[in-house]
Amino acid sequence: MRKQERVDPMIKKSAIALLSGTLLLMAACSNGSGGQGQTGNSAKPEDKKEAAVNKEPVELVFYDGVSDYTEERFMKEIGEPIKKKFPHVTPKFSPFTKLTQVQDLISAGQAPDIIFASSGLFNDVVNKYNMQTDIMPLIQKYKYDLNKIDPVSVDMMKEISKGGMYALPTLMSPSPIYYNKDIFDKFGVPYPKDDMKWDDLYELAKKVTRKDGNQQYYGFMVSFQHLMVRNQFSLNLVDPATETTSFADEKWNKMTANISRFYELDGVEPNAQKLGAAQQRVMFTKEKTLAMWMPVSTLLTGQELEGMNWDMAQFPEFKELPGVGPQPYPISFYITTTNKHKDQSFEVIAYLASEEYQLPMVKQGQFPTALTSPALRSSFGQDTAMYKGKNVKAMLPAKYAKASAFTKFNNLSRNQLQAALEANVLQKKDMNTALREAAERANAAIKAEKAK
Image (cartoon, rainbow, N blue to C red; front, top):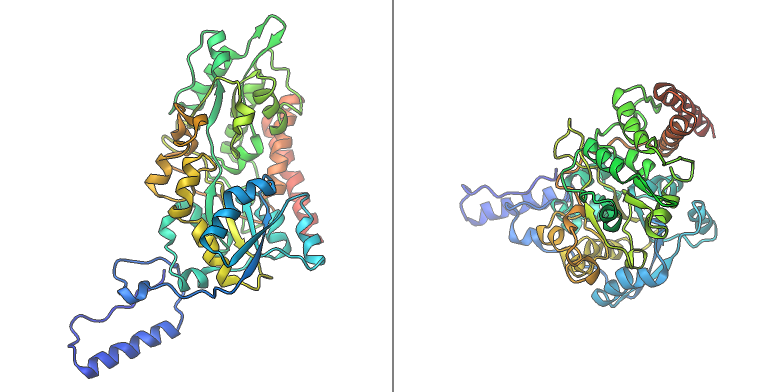
């Protein structure tokens, strides 16, 4: 925590005391004391002045580590607002095409200046190539208040950064249950509600997993890998101390079995595709045979939902964890090690992590916020016909679960959890056995990766 410099109020305002206080203040500043760049009420007015940023023309290349943006969308939501706020900055978009693309760009001498990525893709597009840099000195220099950002997301970033800050968490992945009202109406079943427990959701799914004529309808599906990354028990995918994984904890069994039961309902006839998010998206948005879907990491678009009578409900709870939603899954903006304009870049990402920039975007339903501002959290989609009359508060939970530990091997472990679910659901393998074998495969993959 950065210590605020204070002048002892008992010091008299004599010339000698004033000089002494000034020298002490200068010494404290020159020592560059570490910690968060948070500003407190005790800061002197002159302490709150922002450092000046060079206004010479500069081009900043943004790489889409989210893998979800077109150039048109980037310019509309990010590029044009930056250009309007900072006329000297020219944002340039570099689209995602494959996981190894960052290495290709580095090799070609075209490394990006800023990478925006979800917490789940940080390792694949930033950490793997050592493109991260600690921006805590810039946070302190320009006095950005980290209290503006969801505290669990800040803690997550500090844990990833080993005490520093590699990025500013800015946007937030949503976590609602999307549901198709027409399917519930067809079978005379009440709609999903907020504050449901997982068992309530299961009972509801049973009632709409039915066949009508030749058409089979499915109650509920979820992007399981994203769910495990955001698990409500805050279990670690990999132990950071040993860099190994174990799924022997009864809570891993509970969470996996909690999902497998939805695929065991009569009529579901599960396969590997139905256990994957891509096919689930098709079933919900195009085929309209899935009553409830929880993507856990993405917004559905107006085009996808066009013609559907839909709404949302909040992320379900475990009875042992009342009021606790998923872990946060922020999209953060990373200033890269190769960036030659770090001060200008920080000015830009600090703007993106501000209410000034976000309020009109949030009102248009472009994205949920990672900031704590009540105005931002309560105004999602209010200027967009798509969300008129919808339960938009379901986008974000009232309380996030504590973030799990980060290691560079988390995704290897996550992939094996998906395999454990498939072994249980498709091969009818005992859940304990499926999880034990998944841990063995994950540890072998981690060992092989470390040997490279």
